[in-house]
Length: 453
Image 1 (cartoon, helix red, strand yellow):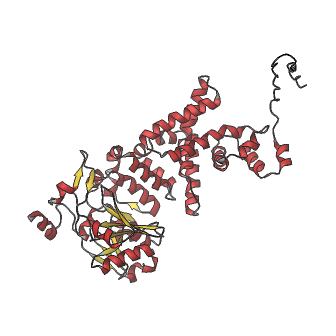
Image 2 (image 1 turned 135 degrees about the vertical axis):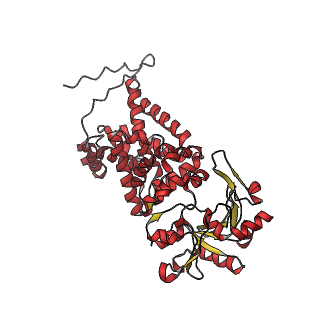
Image 3 (image 1 turned 60 degrees about the horizontal axis):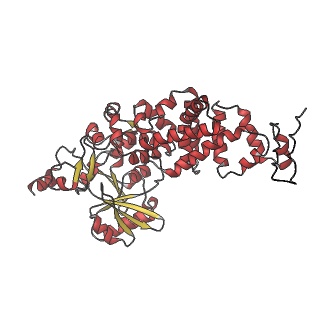
């Protein structure tokens, strides 16, 4: 109890003491109308019950940059049970962090209780927080003050609190000044913070590329030497962060920066091999460019297509290897797909729904090289034709296949029936099957078809 009292008076041990700065609406220009209706409802309801409640984190950062947040989070001094009781459509989730999801129609707002620093010395620490042998936080449900909550967040630009009622930003860590300086700075000792959660290294790369922020020198310095810690993180969390990175609209720059910081081995184990192949690197970069363009144009993006592109040259190499052993093309391709996906399943935990999409896109590729007979017509009817065709265009654009194959399919899919028939390339003559004799009185077996002149 004494230690808890001292922590409340003097702050947690080793925690940097921030000085609260109030950023007024006249300076930041964020009006409450830009906050989602659900987040407004959550903050208003909690404040009416006597609690502090703020929009927090990435939403405040994006609003200050003039961007449209994808979602809104709320932080409050109310405990999870109190938040849950205040909203009929809500539920408590999480074990590592206990959170409340409040649902308003299709929108969900995540509400967290102000937290203290795990390991700060309070009596709650031993019961409600734990770490692994590398220092990574496994569980952290130590509640604290708003200032402590700001201290335990990762980067200063993510530690700002916006009060829709007053339209003020509460800033304990100079996050707004860093945002104005276009700087990404870790709160506290970067090495310790990366040990607590190695995903922060990946997040630093993503936010830097996405927001155009330069990583602070002290924040960047430990990353290369600590990159291996990413391998201690559950693969599901690595996959989630990788998906955010690839769908950020700045995937190309993110991948290049991952390589510069030595982080690619812990994210996509095969990415380093791919980027060392001239054709492979060109193919991957084209795929990332296309994805970034679609994200920025607010068009739908298929993660399965993107992962199919990232892994294609590993599949291609394995495919050729099996063919060299005498295996026929289609079985060789399926063996190659099995091998590559088996490795990725252990390293990255790609969900099976993406696994199926990748297999379908890959298995269509050899069929595009057949442009005779009825097979091109049958290929047009395939549900994944469009995805497979887009993939083919990347292969042509990267130099893996002749450009005229992609051009032929572009014309063929939009042509009329007569034009399509005229476009078909001459193929091997169809073989006439012999009709078997089934018994007395049955027709004689047909003679083989004469060879064409």
